[in-house]
Length: 410
Image 1 (tube, rainbow, N blue to C red):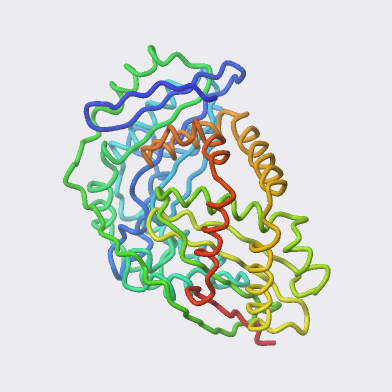
Image 2 (tube, rainbow, N blue to C red):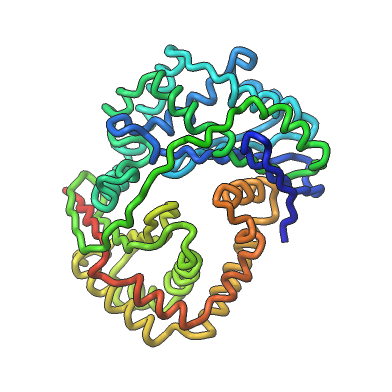
């Protein structure tokens, strides 16, 4: 059980504080409802570029990273299609100076054209390194176009292409910042040896200049239409790769956690389903499965590397057949107990350090579902075998799947 104190400031900022006196450091996580789905069409990559610009500093603190290192802190950030997240670990004795620096960059950020130009070059180099030069680096570019065409998820957070990033101007970033980095879109979670009664007034003082903007844009999403789509591409990659996507759920849908347990049941190492594919039939060399975690129109994604002399179409058919057999014959109470034990271990481990707790509190606070985090294990244990069975039949329907055949050209 993770205890917390929550306060919503007058400007809408949500503050969540967890006391943990087992640590000498304080972890902080800022979640902004400002992901790449809010990028301008034709200028994708804005949210991600702004994440970089937020590390360029202010007039008072010209170089953010230098000040953070002097304070003995360490941090990083990421941007996905829904949120931008900044997380940091600092010694307790330097918490207040660090908070002053944070409040300054979120209220006094410089939109210096020269600095933005430098960060744009950094992002473009990152694009080249991760999307063009790395094998399968453009995988999500193809998937987004295949599955999310004509929706705000049509491009990955880093941007559709280099040309889109190049088109972004300082005025675009300022407009994005002014609309979305506002009070009612910010969740700040803190975990460490702190006193909420003393810390909250300081946070109110520092972050009150951030304006509230209840008129900020609310995106409308239509459910993607489940339909069988196949895309084949050929590239200079080491081996073929199959990506099989099933339409999952919105993040707040009750089926999301059922899908999570189902994945743990079917695809964990040692399951009879995988034993058949890997050891008996020897059809795959590598397999990974995960939920995309999108707030809207999520996916259950399977990435598989076929074994030598196994075609991707053959693998899809064998995969579908063996999965149906497993669901019909091998989903039993013993497997569910084992899966729940593994999930309990994962949840317990994630609650041991302050950074994990701050990040989880910030994320679930953004979802407005803190009770899910606090009662997460109970939610898993409430899932029945019948719910798992019915959901598996509904989810793993091949005629609703999206398939990407990523073929090696050599």
